[in-house]
Amino acid sequence: MNLTRDGNCLCEHMYPPIDYRIVQKIGEGTFSEVLKAQSLRDGRYYACKSMKQPLDSVEQVNSLREVQAMKRLSPHPNIIQLHEIIFHKETGSLSLICELMEMNIYELIRGRQYPLPDSKIKNYMYQLCKSLDHMHRNEIFHRDVKPENILIRQDVLKLADFGSCRSMHSPPPHTEYISTRWYRAPECLLTDGYYSHKMDIWSAGCVFFEIISLSPLFPGTNELDQVSKIHNILGTPDSSLLHKFKQSRAMPFNFPPEKGCGLSSLIPHCSAVALSLLYQMLEYNPEERIGAGDTLRHPYFRELQMAEKRASGLCWAPGTLKGGETCGVASSMDHLWRIARQGRRQHHSKHVADTLIRRNGPPYPTELPKLNIFIPAPKMSSFPVSSLPPLAGTHRGSLPAFTSKKWHSRLPKQPRGEIHHQELKSYHMPPIEQKRGGY
Ligand SMILES: Nc1ncnc2c1ncn2[C@@H]1O[C@H](COP(=O)(O)OP(=O)(O)OP(=O)(O)O)[C@@H](O)[C@H]1O
Image (cartoon, rainbow, N blue to C red; front, side, top):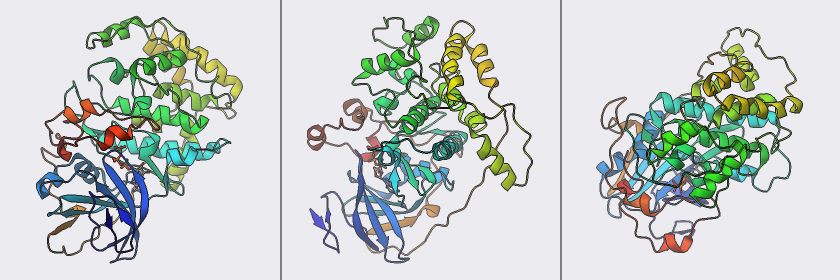
């Protein structure tokens, strides 16, 4: 163990970044430890994400997908801001200095007895959908949307942990393990890597449910159980869709036909309009699943859209929805969706949605956080994010391609409470550029 200047313990792999006073550990993931740190230059507090695996060179640091993605996606009010990168050449230790948030969504809901106020849920979901829309517009998908990777500070929500993201231009199949099981979309579970950015919407739908109900929607214990939990609630999909999935997966597809209990029985207090969005995010078929841009125009977010339009001086035409979407309507939503999913699935589903949806494009408010610049110390490469070289490939091109798929095939991400510490401790971690497979 190392000791920081304050006498706090740090793990062996870490080297305390100069010019920062480590205050305390605030989080830990599979690949990093996150510390609260105070800058000795500006006195501000930051989150210092220190990678467990050493890196070989500055080039390797620059080609990390996490670094590249954060650079491409910043600044955006709902994307965690990378402030500085500190790389210690001698030890290979890398610290990403990011803006500090208060907690993640899991910590927000953990142990709560009463639901969050509707307005708070809506506000968080709007911001989450904005972060996804921004990311997908920039042709990157996240691949690990889950409560632990969604951070909040007061009422602001930011998406974090871009270590699994991928360019939307990289063609499937994607062979590495991605996404944490409970939030894994059907196409990820049932095909050999034939998934797209729509998987993020499914995961966000699972998070939406979890924020409403305070418990995970599909807490599968293994992949098969995960599929069965989805079918128990949403029902088995059309055989044609299963047939399509089946073409690319050697997995038993003899799922017993199920109607599914529906979502509204699980969250009886949920409004019909919220359920409508939830169902569209949890649409089994990724091609029919709502896109991030359309989630923002969903009537569930009507007040927020109106507030934004008012703020930007535009007038909002009254929507098709009347107020008072209540629980009574909610139960019929399950029924409508079941009908929609039989036969003329797409058109019917859209028709049901259209009774609630009014399409309006919200403007995109963006604040432009500033990056700090300082002079690097000897043997320590520290660079402000703005000085990084442009993304490999092209501006809309592919993020760097990493070669090894081994890391993921041997260590899938575990849902919370399922991390096998023993296994992790004895694991030999490959170089970080290989840790999550290729783009
Ligand atoms: N900027 C931040 N501010 C506050 N807390 C943070 C910040 N970044 C990360 N954390 C905390 O640290 C935890 C781990 O961070 P992160 O998910 O980025 O690490 P990881 O090693 O990539 O994890 P994973 O195992 O999901 O890949 C988060 O769940 C969060 O609680």
